[in-house]
Amino acid sequence: MSRTVVITGASAGVGRAVAVACGRRGDRVALIARSRPGLDGAAAEVTAAGGEALVLPCDVADADAVERAANRVEAAFGSIDVWVNAAMVTVFSPVERLTAAELRRVTDVTYLGNVHGTLAALARMRRRDRGTIIQVGSALAYRGIPLQAPYCGAKHALRGFQDSVQAELRQEGSRVRLCMVQIPAVNTPQFDWARSHVDGRPRPVAPAYQPEAVAAHILAAMDRPRREVWVGAMTPLVAIGSFLAPAFADWYLARTAVSDQTADEPPPPVRPDNLYTPAAGLHRTRGRFDAESAGRVVGADAGLWRWGAFALLAGTVTAATAGLVARRSAPRPRLTS
Image (cartoon, rainbow, N blue to C red):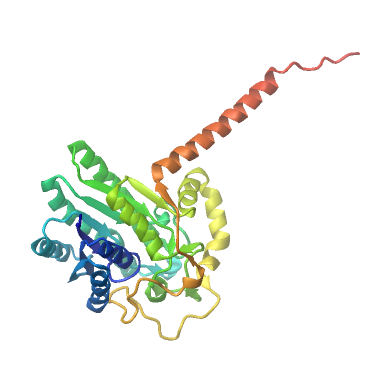
């Protein structure tokens, strides 16, 4: 059965991959992003895949514009079944090189833009007591890393906002479902068009995955919404490791994260920058890292990972305690004169 799906950040990367995958299922797909040419390209792919597309140029940092876009979706396609928040911008930079304006812009789009989408969807879904809202999160919602403070801060904030809304919906007994899909490094164009204040050329921290592989887990969350999904083997390691050993994570990231995010090549002399305006000519699903990006990725309910970690920790503590008790209760050899 086809659905009406709204996707922000739909002109490129993960958002575009989700849109095309929805098209293959025959869905009616509303595409929201700033770039009209980028959206037109995504719409053509959705239509070719078998879906129906609606192009809605919009800056998600503008709450009123998001609300108007939601009204247009319902006028064209009827009630919204699924809303996917995938819009983001970022700045690759050490903290001391960031400006207040850059920090605000990343927050306005990557945090508040997703909040605006959630509020627009909730206003309509609550009335009907049905619908699914999916946040495209990140492993970095659990752990900040060097050179990505604005992005990490925004994803942390989005996770806190999502928790609050989850609790409120449960208190109401609402059947509206929320899911946050925490994703690993993905081969998208962001590494070529995000603003950068680093000496090398930005790159994803390995292992990286293709957007289509991540999109498959987002579609699965549409069909069976769970509170949170962790995609990729590194995501649970980052989330659980940051809770259990944050000081070790600081030490490890201080030694590795800067070099892991910068290629051994100088940036091009003229580099696109999409922080405030779209970057022309780069709106596509994949970035330049095809050769090192995997086409498949594991994913599971975050609760399963947490229970598994708890069971492992509990088993380790139990075994250590039993060993200590056994040592203390063992008879000691008597000394003879």
